[in-house]
Length: 308
Image (tube, rainbow, N blue to C red):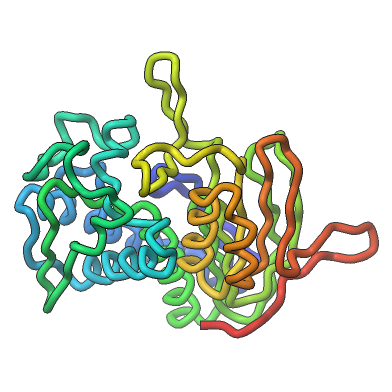
């Protein structure tokens, strides 16, 4: 029987589960300390975060933790062909998904309408010998990958330090470490179709949703997953996309890219080969690459596969 602790971080409902009950207390303290450091380094909502200070300065020397998170974001942009990028900060603020205007650090350079689209501007963000350079007019937002990277890191560190199998869930990003398998309920909103799976130890799951984080502007309502080619919310072809992968960053990158790609999501996910579950706008479910189907006499399981 796993020992479980629920807590909040990054304004998300989070959960830590370990197979060794004696490890729960110290493991929770370790995870909360790690997530606090990630927030201090990479938060776009805190004017005192390292990222916000660098935005005000137009770049500069970064700590190893923030450098790792930025490299992860740039790698995701490259792997997704520009579908998941860290250069949507201005656009997210404009739509109400960033810090209040008085707290948002001003980025030097041209207005949104005159600068390169985020799908390309990420290529001009450089991190060389620990020094970050940000193109004029660009604001970074690491939210697409930093939470998933934190889940991966937290699970790996708890397993290495305390010797217990562990599950770390940060909102829609879930990572595991150790040999134990975990029962995971996959469901976005309470009224959405649900599926329970057995996730092999060392694997991860991420869900990207167009339903949970929404803002209303006048008569329009928008979700937070933006299309880097239009700088607008992606078309709502899918209510949610869930992907299982050997690490949470890969799962999150794939699920977010699928929402952005809309009708092209199925082909893209088939090419990756990761098990995936997509819920259409009308509630119909599409399962790909061996995603398990519930049955009365068989507990669905995701593959053990290779881990990293």
